[in-house]
Length: 336
Image (tube, rainbow, N blue to C red; front, side):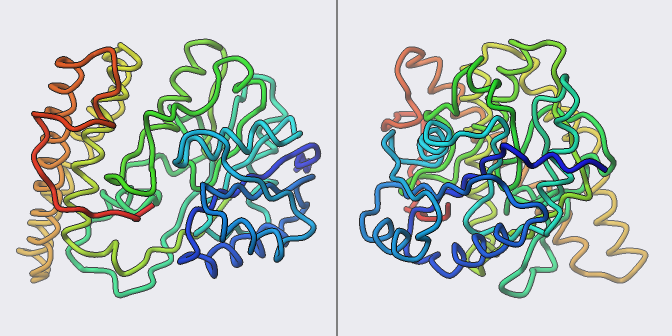
């Protein structure tokens, strides 16, 4: 396999001192990449104290502040603007890359039709994993889930925890949409990577994105994301995100993969859960079946609320404003 990480920039975004140790481990894993990227950019999202500490710690790296709207999308766009590589990789500040992660992904980008690639994201549980937590919903904690392709091949979109894209994609279609994705004080939203990839596929019809299972990152999952409260809220936020994404893209095809996932993957998961409870005397099988059903219901509810918001206010950004349609939810912030 040819190593293709030359002329590669790797961007890590950070926003809180609470994840300082995570950031140290993430950067340490990037330093061990074989071969290493040409440059590493650490983007600090509107946090002067964190930026000062990062500059003192990472004296050989490029540390910059997010000069765009607060949030992960704005921070990534700041990193893209400051970087120089023709291939741009992204790693979350709470993710640890395996040494050949970047080499496996970037090798696919030697082909001119490949716009970007991603690898497998494995959970690194920092607390006991609840037995009711279904594999079909590992996307709730930002990991590769049951139902995602498991072999090398094209995928509709990438996951930002560990991915790379050609710079020409951003030059062609622009950056990540700041109306989507995580901010420091909001619901745990998503969708910015998917929306970007769909825009790219429309602008470059012959292009494709590749999943490479040998490219592995381990994503740290804190105990606070292993509660039912976070599970339901994350599912609700996912539904909102899909509604906003479909409104931005103005296309029913934007949700084709989600419809397939519901009918083919989740229905089997419910059956499997009941089967585990009846045939294997696994009482938590019922819990997993319930979690799948309730998680889907929360996502559908969020999607309906989001659609009502976009119909009521199609011009502005209703998801960043108070809405008459959105039910009140107790603050659950800083889950990014």
